[in-house]
Every structure is written in C-alpha cells, then in structure tokens.
Amino acid sequence: MNNETIETNKLFVGNLHWNVRRQELKEFFWQRWEVAYASVSLDRESRRSRWFWFVTFINGEDAIKAKEECVWKTLHDRELFVDFARAREDNENNEITEE
Image (cartoon, rainbow, N blue to C red):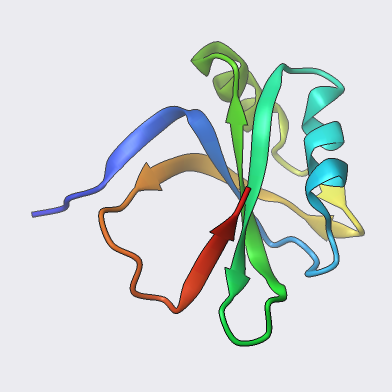
C-alpha cells in the first residue's frame, strides 16, 4: 500500500542545476502564476541543493496550469521535470528542507 498523497497546489520540479536559487525559481513561475513559496531539498553533509525543488502555489488551479505549461521548459539550459508533489510521512534520504 502506498502512503503518498498528491498535493494539488504543490509541484515537484526536478532536473535543476544545483546552483538554482529559491528566488530565481520562484520568479520563473511567478511570471505567470501566483506562487506562495519555493523550497529546496539540501544534502545534510554538503548543504548543497539537490536536483529538485518544491514550488507551492496560492491555489491548485495555478499549479495545474504550471504543470501543463512547463513541459519542455528549460532553466539554466536544463529541461525541467514537473509533476505534482507527493507528501511523505518520513524523510529517509539524508536530506533537509530549506524554505
């Protein structure tokens, strides 16, 4: 049985360059949609960002539109992978979240 729940106003944004910063990612989405905040998963040891972020939108409709419209979009010459975030109860991957 899968304990994951899809969060309809929060997107998982993957395949990002490690150097992408929160404000830059927020502005990338803010150009067209209302973003509440963006958070990154950091490696506990190096404190460098991992290749993915989470972007939370004010409403689920904007998240749906962003997911649909970000197919083939690039940031820092890397094609984004965008999908709805899945909530987890535990954090087993030696990572921390910075908001």
